[in-house]
Length: 185
Image (cartoon, helix red, strand yellow):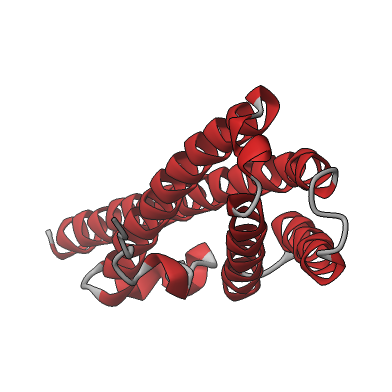
């Protein structure tokens, strides 16, 4: 009788371990998938930048430093999207975001450019990409929060080592996106 109780307890522990392992690994895979979504949107945005810069360059050739910074920021964002950490992706995202704001500020000074169909289409695509990037950031942060909750709570925290899963850093929005926009009339 004593052996039966021990066998039942061992089976229950094995089942709990399997469930815990699978639950943690599934949450980790969801976080990886969500981070991949950010990479896709960062890459898409970085791919739109050369077209936007080319369009603006034709009107504002003397704004060389702005274009150089956009190029450098785009390169950093593409590199971070390929193989950077969450913090590196966030920093590259913030740098590219600032560089794009500078390019759009240059464009404001050229009414013909703002009226250009090509420029308007690029702005629309960029706005759509920014919306998708914001969604991807939120999706990743939700997945990271779910994983972090599992990693910190009983009984799942006992299986983190076996599952090879740990806490994830949250994706911080660029500082330019945390301040309210200014509106001028």
